Image (tube, rainbow, N blue to C red; front, side):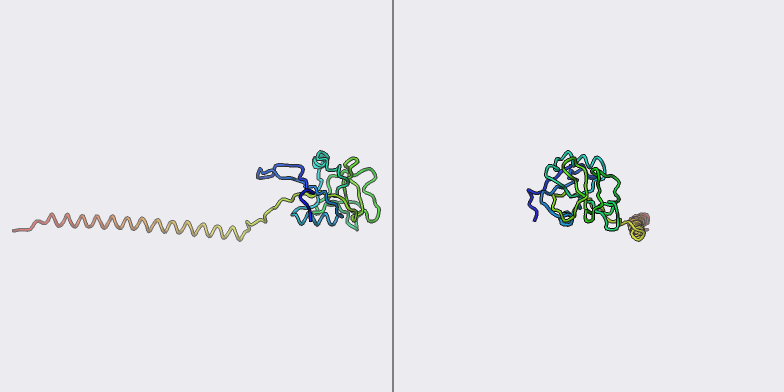
Length: 198
């Protein structure tokens, strides 16, 4: 169980809808890398990706590193010599490794930020550290498919056709009424024109 006092929101940024939200969430609770990954996922997030020098600067400026080593979402696959992907399988395009890291020591397969200079190092995944989660953004599935396009076109054609039929009926009824009134008036006029012969 994570106490709310163990959570610190950092790196406020503007999201697509203009609402302020935190990019990173720091947990002071100590956990192994796998436990940290699970806790982040249970909160709807993932272990943090540090994709750029700007992201690294956000972490540096927040001063959470004063709390000690911090797990981030780096893990080396057993079959690989180097760290090449983040926890979400995206490629590692930015790095901030400390000198001599990542090491090639067996078992040192998880990445963390170290407080001395905010660089990264590889460590044993079973080590208990504080950790940094990253908010994940929900991307709704693409619901516009060829099938939905066709259904939309058919529904649109049906609605337009229905309106045309309705308007025609409405106009015809009005026309019929006008014609009927004209006939009645004409009949009345014809009746009054016929004067009886006495």
